Length: 233
Image 1: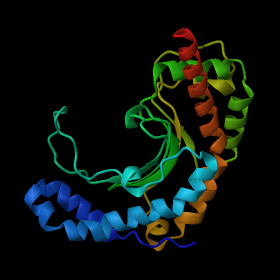
Image 2: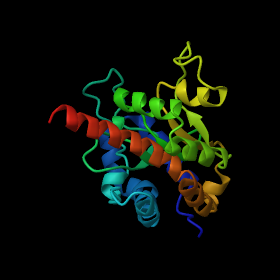
Image 3: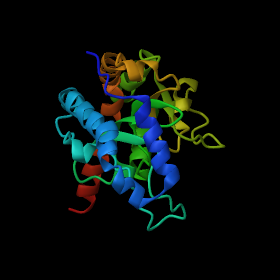
């Protein structure tokens, strides 16, 4: 299908709103924000929702809960800018803190746009569990690695350690093991496909193609959860 609801005007508005940094200006232009940003993003969530639920039936697909807010929470940060110049969508389990949630995402920034799956800040226990799965060549890891190899549009993300945590591990596992955080992402600085709507079918196919990567990390989470319950029982 063609999803052609995103426009260059959306990026221009987000940039201007960010630079003005004014609640009064934003309030005066809420109708513009709704037309250029809210409505297209909500429509995309509604289109993506059924496909995301095929991957994980527990995903929250309510647009108001999946789309990020443009207003920033400035209470606990030195950056006091009131508004973001970018917007994103996340599909994740309910009642999970965004920073440590495993999620599928789609984002539009001023310099690029993209999508993928992974963490913003992976819990340390999950990191250690998925490392053990890699070291033991767990079938979920092997399926995740194979899926990523067959999805050339994606690359692993996550800062690397200065020293390899497992220097004796096989070379093909090192790129996965040597990550402080982990995810798989596609990113582009070319907005042509985004604005003409041809990105949609390719994106959905790609997100489904890397579902084994998501399942690998979800299994690691579940094993950590079960171990925690056993430890406290």
